[in-house]
Image 1: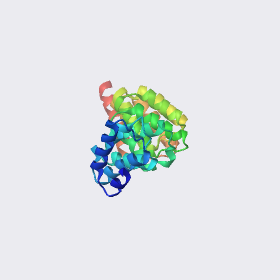
Image 2: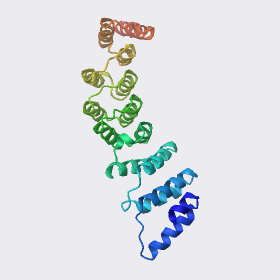
Image 3: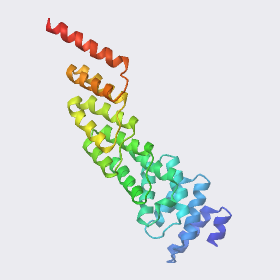
Image 4: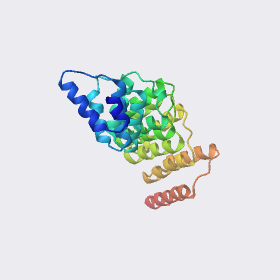
Length: 258
């Protein structure tokens, strides 16, 4: 009867029927009924009811893979970070193969976690993906990296890239270097740049431009010239602003020496 009611869209009636039966000591641990009920609520836009049913059966009934994917996809679309994280974690614990989850949905969970500052959870999900031979896209890895930058936790960021055996793309690497320079200066930023290069990061004109610019701000003209020389040695073209910065710093140093 419950299955028939679900098929015709009488979802509240199904909930009432199940509640009544359970109050009489009759437990219906039917995966199909509960999964269809959750999917039905998602389908008509009643996400709160879908979550309520999901919470009721959590730990007692294993919903179908399709049910979990439909629910997770909706939660990611509505940016419900905590709930999406919970459902995705449950799926992993229930033994679902994460390769059966849409890549965009799974990556969406990681990006939401990164944007909400839940970096350790995002990192754990990246590692789960890697365990299933699923390499997250650069957009996802960038979100994790930016989260670490916000927390100024650059040691953990380096260990993250080392653990996944991957280097940041140029845009992410430059943002990391900008964050390092702005928070700690070039003296502490340089060893991180060297470490990133060991991991496979390829600095570009912007990378060296950042180091030159911050060196000029710190009045470290010798360092600025070293970075300029390194840039030219790699056949990269310095931006006009970098040249002006070095020239301006040199003139200022000369005036101070008068």
